[in-house]
Image (cartoon, rainbow, N blue to C red; front, side, top):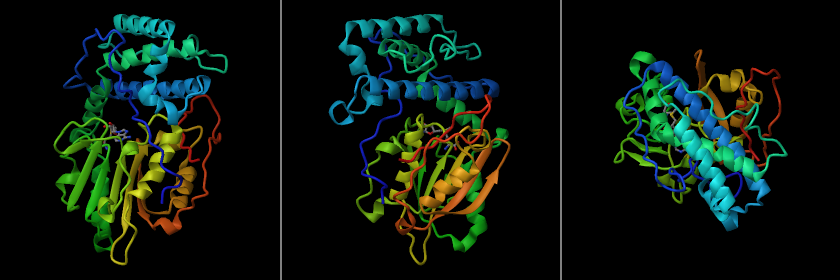
Length: 355
Ligand SMILES: C[S@@+](CC[C@H](N)C(=O)[O-])C[C@H]1O[C@@H](n2cnc3c(N)ncnc32)[C@H](O)[C@@H]1O
């Protein structure tokens, strides 16, 4: 059902978390955060990861990187840096400068400055990009890495602050009553096994995965883009929950791939059983993006064989419950490109590309 042959895809976060010299202590993720600071950090991580992804895409072209020969660039870009002494020095100097200069307890401020020093254009050299990578990697590490991001996101799930988004899935499934018959679920991007999707017991079994597991025996540490494709029906699911994950994925192509891939993990509908996708993204991804609106999402979902059962938006989030009609309804020729839909400088660049 995969739209195109599945290539081995990248881990979204580089495995490299220490500088070349390996002599920096890692900072532990904070145990608690004030809400404002948590929001600032989440935004900051999104910016850093997205920027890093654009830089790697550009380096990939410049150095004529081949996935077959060299592996995935997200995991292996350090081989480029380590190849030349001069590259290593540029990366390390920027790493150190950022590490020594960045005050992490202050409101996040940009160490990267796309308006002046860190702009990437057609003239940007590999050296320039390695310099920016050094800054970004150092900042990610100094802020505590993915663990800090997750602490901030978990805090956003606090019941007192609106609760976890799976509440909406549970409500909808209950509303649909016996029209919906789902036993198994895959929760992509699972921060906690105490969320309503788990405690409500609406599923007989839930497989939980996350890039960085906070409950190692319960949540499998796995990148969904690398999860082996099901070989037998028992490895598929009646429901996939993908809440606030796609916006975390740094590149538009990987977001598209994630959506296409979900079809491979859903059971073909049967006479007594349907398959569902619960999907959540921040509202600005559809309300204020230069490249994506609700019509774009409707089109993508319908071309991938989904039918909208429920939609709800709050002032922050957009939620969908979609029924998957099966592989017969997937338009394998469909592609979705980057096309400007809204102009204006206050837009965000959220985009989904399907090739
Ligand atoms: C903002 S949290 C969302 C948590 C929860 N699903 C919710 O709705 O509140 C995003 C989570 O997605 C995880 N994530 C991002 N990309 C992923 C991927 N490719 N595979 C698995 N998990 C991923 C991140 O590690 C992070 O824990």
